[in-house]
Length: 173
Image (cartoon, rainbow, N blue to C red):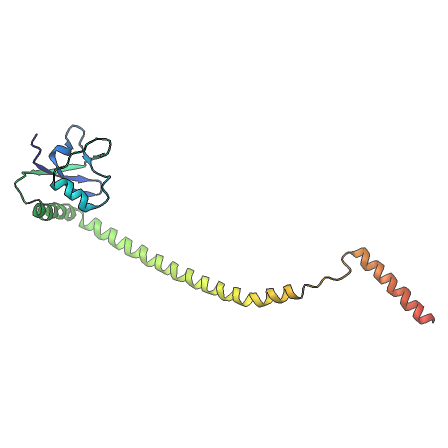
């Protein structure tokens, strides 16, 4: 196997250019430097033909299909831009109606979500206004929360009896 050749492979998330030495034809998979955090770093690994020091560092990703191979004497940058774009256009040409349907569905869903967010914002604003109006009422009721000496029904009955006795005494005297 020529380690200088490239392969155009379709993954679950799209097309990518990989080294032929990364590809495992029997498993229909390839090793992938997913521990690299940026696309630029991954592209550098492809261009400089990096190989893993330890296979545990690199993930093994399934490949949906292989579109073709290219020699190492090509300009990697132009190959990536032109050939992959052509393959992407071929893939998209088959599913234009599906993409249009998906795009329209996303637009409708986004519109509905925006309406819901607007209504939610309106409700939150009204709740804030009501809470502001309720604050003086709450503070007023807390200030006027005076405790009376009579707290039970028995105390009230006893108080009424004393009141009647006093009134009776005043009438007699």
